[in-house]
Length: 109
Image (cartoon, rainbow, N blue to C red; front, side):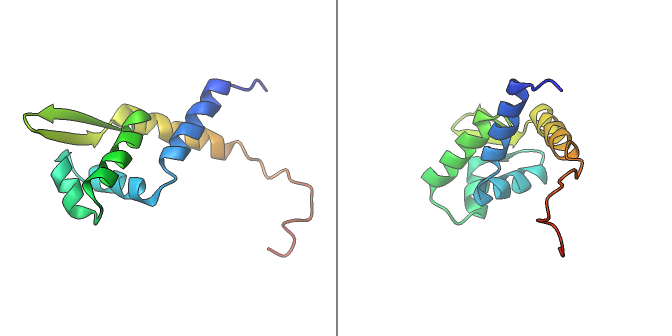
């Protein structure tokens, strides 16, 4: 089987972005709305503005969300193309395990 290093890097980048509970909460928040403004997110999460901004930046970096400036406000939404790409990559990653471990580490579990 040929290893696709670029695919592995993408899985790792998405996993890193999802490794923080605040970023996961932001994604849940956005997934239940067509779009929302930074102030809506900030109001819902009990964090300072700079912290929320940093988490949004990390999610944007991997493309899971996108932002659009409307006047003095920034509107955010899920980037459905990247969302679906992440879903497929994780599905491929998790379905690749065949349970072929031959050690005794799973006995009695």
